Image (cartoon, rainbow, N blue to C red; front, side):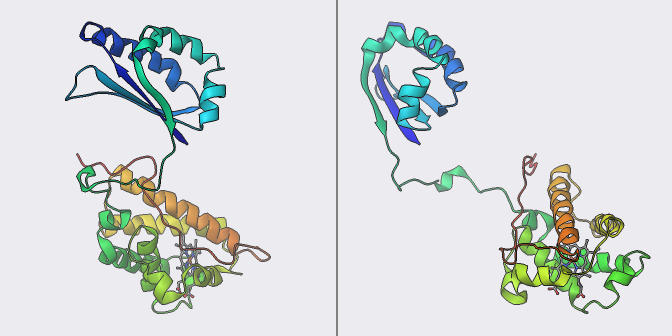
Length: 257
Ligand code: HEM
């Protein structure tokens, strides 16, 4: 990635048309695969001084790719009258110094925080395994489960959804979970029932019901149960070691009104 800066000095009478010309030029610019993003800023202290910043995939992509592309003539036709007003036009390589300031605001809460933290996941798995024990399809699968199993799965889910890494630290992380599913030959009807009961448990214990949270929650559960089923089949060859997955909001961030 490379950043191009173009500095202009525009006479007062031309400024309105200059900005309008760039708004039109931005259409072919934005349609070019070499362009990552762009921004035209006007100087506050010195009206008429402008900086155009364009991030390109590379200097070569800009100079050969974009300038040789079908989009370039339409772009250049708009800005040609202002070429004389250019004071600097150069490429800059980013350094390691970059970041976000406190003023950018807090990042979105994790799914773990949104759900209500560790207590919420403990309540969820308590309710879930109560249903499992009374279920014709799943009771035989979990008949001999460890008495702490609901707690362990609560730790797992809390970690997946952005909480503390306690399953990794206290319970052996992904390899241990994988070992617990191996050879169990989970069936598709059992997988579906697992999801149905977990969803019922989520409603029962009052996990947030908003569409964004439930979409992310269900997305993980769908993914995780499919992996559990596949990895539990005799002869399966899953990845032996991996971090506990971390699940985020996906395409729909939390709705905060
Ligand atoms: C997203 C889906 C799933 C997650 C997150 C999950 C999570 C876990 C975890 C973390 C363990 C190990 C607990 C420990 O540390 O001892 C475990 C064990 C186990 N899981 Fe799953 N699991 C999922 C899906 C399933 C499904 C679909 C089934 C079967 C229908 C299943 C059956 C079992 C069984 C039987 C054990 C062993 C329980 C014991 O004997 O203690 N899991 N699971």
